Image (cartoon, rainbow, N blue to C red; front, side, top):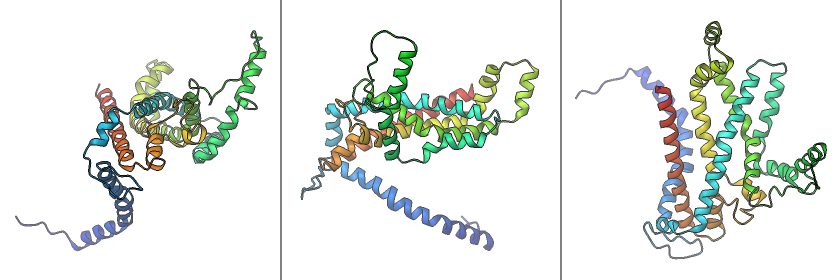
Length: 305
């Protein structure tokens, strides 16, 4: 078969393009692709950091995970955290975007205020919310006490042990995470809303469509790409939750905030069982990949309807 010959200027443009992406490709291979492949290789070994011998054990680490109660707890806690943050967090972001899309006065100021938490590091956010959740001088308990007294509720107000109770610790981390990340998704939703042609809404108003009807039949379907992106990114982010539980609770109380990534960190860097920790990472990767594909499938099916 005769090979197609490209003009010289096209070959030159292609070469320039490859040169531009070359730095990214080098960094991607060195810091993403190689560690990913190397991590799978380690997961097939009994890889103790301090041990001289690192015998090959095949999928023994993966089979051991099936009998590991702590891994099961971490998996359930991570799913619980995702349940508390993915959909509620995106609802908050979408509501903020809808409010800003109304072209209110001082829109840029509100954008900056809502987006400000996104640029903070997890350590700073954790310090702020540890103060907010304090049972002695925290703002949340203070306002709850004021509300208690305003409503003249019976008895004496008891401070809520936000981070010290197994029942409230994970919801507290979820609330902090929603506050922390709502601004990022808000901007994406706002960009999606601004891309919807105004003519669609005018035609719907002429036909007598209500506000809810315009949102359900125009805004939501046309916002599907933004919705899909934010949901997938939120799910991936929730599955990687680490800093919040590591700094604020250390996985407690009673393992109620032990997440998969925190368990992986403790296994790898406290017990030095790198092979087992890599197996945890790969199982979590497969679970998140499955849920991500399910999200694509469900939202694509809705679009075809």
